[in-house]
Image (tube, rainbow, N blue to C red; front, side, top):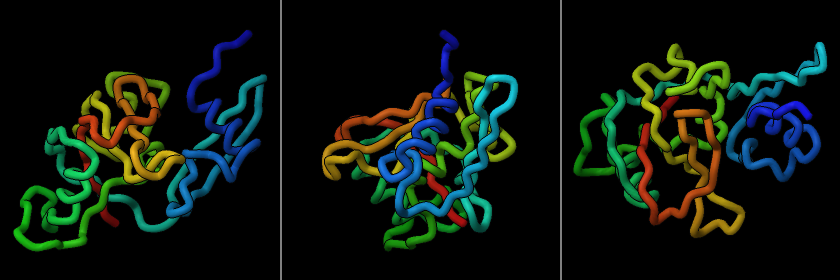
Length: 162
């Protein structure tokens, strides 16, 4: 049996179970292109709308609640933290993080033209787990792993804006 990559599993899940797919959160508009050739199912996942701007790499590690507060107070430059809420940046959705994964490479498994200086760490998404309270989706960019993590755990944060 051929080993399936997480990306091909995602495509199959999105086609078979689009309403239950954690990779297609309700808050994200996406375009999913799928093709099947030479026995391989491939595709691309692209957020629809203006291109995302990823903040300069801060290398900050924190729990999910602290990451949400950090994003809320981040100033336009993506580096300075204000004393008042700015509402410019946000924690990326799982779909926004997934859109920069590149499974043809690893360490990091990311399209560095979209996210310069991305490191092979685990990063928070704003997309919560099905329970809605204790878990949130994250992406490990060493190999492109997508997983649920306890919100009280510690992952890195890389905010986005449009």
